[in-house]
Amino acid sequence: MKFVRELKRTDYCGKLTSQHIGKKVVLMGWVNTRRDHGSLIFIDLRDREGIVQVVLDPAQTETSSSKEFRNEFVVALEGVVRARPEGMKNSKINTGEIEIEATRCEILNQAATPPFQIDDENVNETLRLKHRYLDLRSPRLQKNLITRHKVAQLVRQFLSENGFLEVETPILYKSTPEGARDYLVPSRVNPGTFYALPQSPQILKQLLMVSGYDRYFQIARCFRDEDLRADRQPEFSQIDIEMSFIDVEDIIDINEKMLRMIWKEIKNQDVAVIPRITFQEAMDRYGSDKPDTRFKVEIQDVAAAVAGSDFKVFSDALSRGGIVRGIAVPGGGTFSRGQFDKLTDIAKKNGAKGMIWMKQEADGTIASPIAKFFTPEKLKEIFEKLGCSKNDCGLIVADDYDPACSALSALRIHIGRELNLIDHTKYNFLWVVDFPLLEYSPDDKRWVARHHPFTSPKDESFDDLMNNNEKAYGKILAKAYDLVCNGYEMGGGSIRIYRNEIQQAMFRLLGMTVEETENKFGFFLDALKYGTPPHGGIAWGLDRLVMLLMETDAIREVIAFPKTAKATCLMSDCPSEVNRDQLVEVGVRLTAQAEKHIEDSKKNSN
Image 1 (spheres, one colour):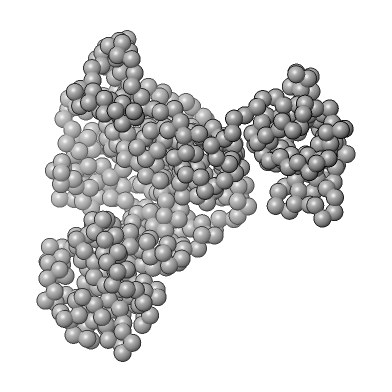
Image 2 (image 1 turned 120 degrees about the vertical axis):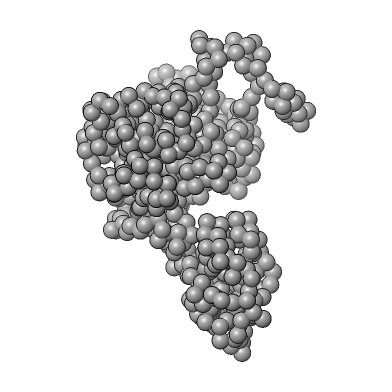
């Protein structure tokens, strides 16, 4: 094999341009397509940087039979870059002005016929995930992963230049379940004990601040055993940042600078001033703490207009402290009963008990299922309070605050997508601030941390925390902030509790006993005694960041080897059964339910 051993690759296929005309090159890659024109054979040769056209004259080229070339064969060639003939240029590819006149060519390895065409974007996703190594050859995924690499390098360079130190934290660590479930790893050396894969390096990066490292970052692998969706995976990467001797403004300032740098380098776009709204405002206007602000449909409060009505759904909601709010749907006046039924289903699936619609008829009257409960004048008032004009329709939800907001947010997003109200050329960034520190869990009958138990309350609430003033818990605001883009939380963080007595008070508030606190967090509380500086940080979802940059809505498209919605890998068939001896060695015994699951899986696979 003369190639590889003696003739080394000189260039990538997709990097060649008209500036290289006349250059002798050695290229290696995959046959993307082969076209036999009798005396000449044309090959589109592909590598990770793109495609270049190669012209082979079997009579002039030193080669194994060019008739043997097939798609996805791995080949190497030597040749000269030349300009394509007039009328034969291809403006659709970067190398469209040139081609390679091959003088020598060799097949390095043959390939079986692939189960799908590499550049076909309409292939069933299950098939693509089963053969992910082939899908990764596609220009789409190669572009995504190359961009991911560039983003990671830009982040490392920016943070390093701004005084941050990259420090790796352990993957095998202590289980401190506060949020999603941990992935557990049994210890062979210490039978009966377990490590946990980190949900985030939260405590460890705070300990680095205790240790005086001042500015830390890491592109960290994190693991959460939670239900999945299009923008979540069981393992993911986050840009983890922590800083000492700072406040909220310092965190926001440096992260905005990094954001502007990334968008300029990757998208060549300048990011304008990023607005801020409070959590409460976000919920009131959009029904979500990560609103998509690329379209103007906003939630309107119609409680005053319907107060005192005989319509039980409205009166019951208001009497128990709930809300009656809705949205105006531009052009929705033409919606059919079937379309309204579909919208009602969306509201119900997102927590609401139902939905009320209203629209204006040709004669100016308001049509609605609730028309008999209101005068025509009152119906018109409600219609206008929603912000509706004659061609619009209104959608109203009456319920407790949280389910009503969830339903209205889902309706708003659905309408935005269905009616093409969203400007997909925009990136709308937003800081959401002043989150509640706590939320009450009816299931657990206790207060829980909205973010995590290390988030600091605002200074004016320290006394309420220390004095166990439960009446104030629902009003305590956190020094927390989320960076939102186009309806996705791109990053989130907080200023941390750095005083030992306040951290202990927080654990007490969350219902943890002294013994439980000592068992889970004793080492951390001990560290806080030894001169902990004020500190805070943020974590960006790297996968989600790249997903937004690449304008896709599936996080799997920017991860090399992703899992499915059931947290499985179709390519390697994992998670998979392990040898019983391995389980015995680490002191693990399967339950009857787990044994049955394995047996059922075997039957289904057969």
